[in-house]
Length: 225
Image (cartoon, rainbow, N blue to C red; front, top):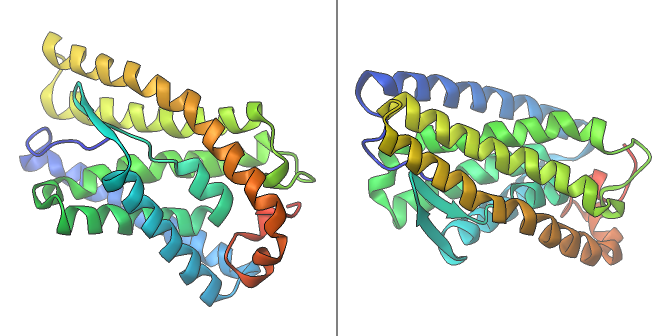
C-alpha cells in the first residue's frame, strides 16, 4: 500500500497534509472514547502492541511490489478486533513512521499519503462494526462471514485510497490505470486470507479472558458492547 515518492508531489501534497491532519483529529476522538472504558496505561500498552505488530506486518512479513504500489498483509482488522480502534490507529501511524525512519527513509516524503491510506479504511471498519456485529456478540465469537465483511471494508478501502492517490497524482493514462488495476487484483488475495488469520487469532484469544481485564486487549474482544 506504499505510494512511492513522486507519485504525488508539489502542490498536490497539500491534500495529503489535510487528510492526515483529519485522521489525527479523529484518532484523538477515538482515544477519548477509549478512555471511557479503559485506563491510560491500557491504551498505551495496546498502542505499543499495535505499533510492533504494524512494523512486523510491513517489514518482516512477505510483501511484494505489484502495479502502482506494494501488497502487504497489513492485518488492520486484526489490530482493530484485538486492540480497539484508537490503539490500532495510533499503532498503524507509529509503526509506519518507524519503518520509514529506520528502514525506508525515502518513503518518509509520502508518510502523510500512506498514513491516510491506512487510517481511513480503519475508521470505516469502526463505523461499520456496529452494523455487522450484534451488540450482544463479543468479537471472539465472530463468524467468518462477519470478519470477511470487515476485512473487505478495510482492504477495499486501502485499494481505493491507493487508486485515488495514483490517479490524483499521475492522471488517468492507460499505463497508470493498468498499474492500479494490477495492484487492486493482487489485493483480492489479502481480502480472502486475512479473515482466516483473524479467526485464528480470535480463537486463540478465547482462552485469554483474564488478559482483557489486565488491559492487554480491548474490552470489546470478550464482551458485549
